Every structure is written in structure tokens, then in C-alpha cells.
Length: 192
Image 1 (spheres, helix red, strand yellow):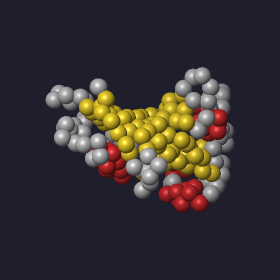
Image 2: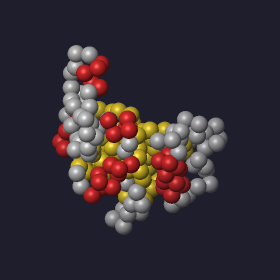
Image 3: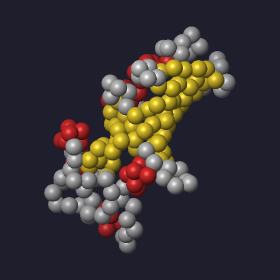
């Protein structure tokens, strides 16, 4: 069943969407748990699947990465980035335009690192940087003996605009929103 319905107002839609997005952070099988994250440092946009870890009270998103990854280089060159959420059962797409902020070895990473356990911690402790060319698969599976937070990084993605498309047999709905100076969302409906 669609989430956004014809009777919903522009004022109701952001709260409705963020409520569903928060479910995605706590329900491992929820379609919003994984998201397409796009950056662009040069002429070619780069997109990849990532796990969205947290939605803050301020409506920002957190994802984890290795500080040596290409996305860090790209965000340092250009902090503008994009998150694309899609819920196939609901026919719901949400695309956020964000400014990325990199957190490494600070209060935020210290808060979240203790929750990163086992194999998940190994994702941030490989002896070689992500994307390094290797001779064999095993070369990419070498980890530091001590699992430290040296390369663990939290990306804080602060949305300044988003667009939602709700597909439905009863009629598609499309709207875009921009964040106002008082951190509310001002929206308008668009032709789907």
C-alpha cells in the first residue's frame, strides 16, 4: 500500500517520510536500511550501496565508512552528495540532496565505534585501503591484529532538499521540498 496518499498535505509529507525512514534504521530487513549514496568530485558521479545507520532528531543521516575510501576524497573535493531511498513494496522513492560532513576520531565516532562488532569492525581495519589493487582475494582480507577505530569514519549527511515520488495505481504523487532557515520543509507538488 502506498505511504503518501492524495489526502496528505505538503505539511504532513516530511513527517510521514521521516517516520518511515526511522523504521529503516532499526528494522534490518526494511528497504530503507540500504541506500544509494552518490558523490561527485570530478565530472563523473559515483554511486554505491551503503547502510544508513541513523536518522538524527535534526533529520540528518549517518553512514559509516573507512577514512581511506574514495568517498572521503570525493566529499573533501565536493561536499554535495545525494541519498536515494527506494521502497519497492510501497512504490516509494525519496531522493535527498545533502551536504556531507566527515567525522573521524572525534566525539561522534567514539560514540558509535563501540557498537561496531566482529566482522563489521573488520570493514574498517583492513591493512590496505579500500580500492587498493590486489593480486588475490586473500590479500584484501588482511586485517590489523588490533581492531581499532583509527580509520572508522562517520559521514553526517545534512539534507537541504528532497524529492519524493509515490507510485500508485490510483495516481502517482510527486513533490519536492527545500529546507527553510527555521529547519522546516517548504514543498510543492510536481507533475509525476
